[in-house]
Image (cartoon, rainbow, N blue to C red):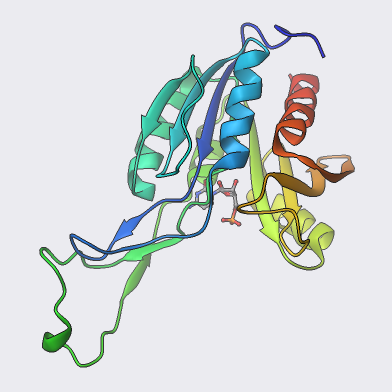
Length: 218
Ligand code: C5P
């Protein structure tokens, strides 16, 4: 690994959860910490790449030296990603985007005394990975993520076939020290003609392996 080996390459990186508002005080979201995406951004910058980080709400500080967009809703993340992607060499889509959003936004605050029970109607959010793949030009690469608790290789391979990124990292969230909120990760890197087992290690080290493989794809 040589610092500067990614000089001249431009990466779009998504990270963190999205928040889908129900009313002015409540939202639907998930437990993504954003760590995997932020580490990928940090390592890519260290190795000389130009990084655009598009992140949902996290407790993390964006690494110095990247263009940083903070978003809340999947739709906002989708809009910025669609705008910036044409100028990128690769997109690393580590965000845990909410698949659904409330169909109706209620202004103000939903009152419990108005409604003895509450039924939520949800509608699908745009799939950022799918829409970037549709606008992809020759040479551009898309890297997706998947989190699975069992049969991770089979499910990862299935997701890879369905969503057709250039590579997919499927991580094992059933293991004690890895996954969503932890410092470490483990899983498989899946590509067209290969799969690589990645044993437990820090998210920074996983990011470096991912970046090495993306560089080989270029
Ligand atoms: O289909 P699934 O959500 O499991 O796919 C995960 C991959 O797709 C991740 O890379 C995630 O960032 C991306 N994704 C996305 N937009 C969505 C849902 C997932 O970009 N609405």
